[in-house]
Length: 497
Ligand code: NAD
Image (cartoon, rainbow, N blue to C red; front, top):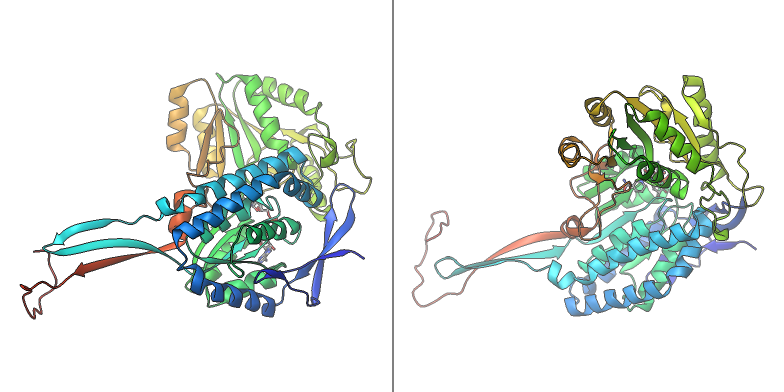
């Protein structure tokens, strides 16, 4: 019988039979590998109740004890990282080395959270007024909902969960239903690390679970990552109900190549950032903006590198794996037809690619379009697959105009040898994360991750200092200890004396 992936509530698997389930595929063979329980509203209620109960003690647990759990979790995650990478590859399809990279970036967020005693330090002002002291503290917001996408089934939960827990909150995590096993594996490691039951709960499912979390009055904050329409829905619904929400959405990331760039470096970067994880990364490069006259040479160099890519089962040492589901592969493939119909030049066609993997796998090879126009759907839409578009522009000003007219603003990169041009780009571009000769500028864990415009709703970026701020409320305490000289009743507004 196919294994059922179950909810994890109050430190154990929920063994009730779910009313609804979904299929979880092995994308490299197309086989249904497992089934996953889809939560009903009542399951979300149980998870939130467990989180609310655990909050009573966890929020008051000392920083020393909390950081002990975090250090233990970090060690366990490090010890089990290969196993976790294998779980990711089996359900997502990305190649093992890429899955290992995802785990490593998640681990770094757990390491950041280990410093929580330092991160939560408040401020103190002695004698703000005569014999009156003022201090500030950061307190947890309460029960937090974390909703994550399919493309980083371990890293995105790890962007949020360690910081939320470290700040004294309790969490209900709703991972993607397409690759849910990584979340349960991580929850097991937390338990082994000594995290009390109920501090982290995992409910699986779809929109029903997400909407139940958004409607639940006990959930005080929501961290979401996914596509822009859903991010907008989560942000508007959650904030409409008085919750604190950070909702990270989709992307269209541009790489600008100036005439003075090292074209070999730029071509390597375009291929790595365009086709790594089969383009299913929110920081993937999907549009190369070639500034005249580099277009012909750059396209030739990119195509030459693409010809060497080996597509296949992520467990077999290939460069690029399958897409996550057949439906997603078909959607991405339909953009190849759309690009051709719109008049773009198809330089490399990934349809019908030879693969080292199962016949029923969800395959689409690396695809390259040249002479793409800004009105074509292959440019305007987030494709989220191995389809790279090259746009040609006459100069720097035209390049920046293309970027800043685009509604997304997640990541971008500029390739140039001119420090002045790069500096100007960093200042002018309306994008949240910028790379200079770095194609995927994902910030390290002690900065924060987030895009601008339709790539992020809310005012807090993910993890790092913004994460600590998002998961805490500040409180300012003004204190006077009476002394024998206190002055009696005074109805005037308090002023410093
Ligand atoms: P998605 O929006 O389909 O799903 C994200 C989460 O929302 C999942 O847990 C899913 O179950 C839930 N969901 C789906 N439809 C819903 C609905 N109608 N109502 C409520 N909840 C719903 O995204 P995905 O396909 O899993 O992930 C890919 C998307 O995520 C891409 O658009 C990618 O750019 C984006 N992404 C963004 C970032 C970022 O940092 N900005 C990072 C990773 C992924």
